[in-house]
Image (cartoon, rainbow, N blue to C red):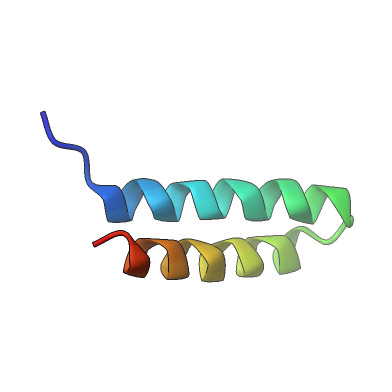
Amino acid sequence: MRTNKKASALGVGIALGVVFGLLIHNLALGIGVGVAIGIVMSSRAR
């Protein structure tokens, strides 16, 4: 069973963004940062 590295990297990035958003009390900004991190991570994990 192969896992999709891009999807998992994006999920990890979003999860980190949500945690970051909760820490700084700005969930929308955290999600935006998390999506950006996830896209960067998924583009590197080919």
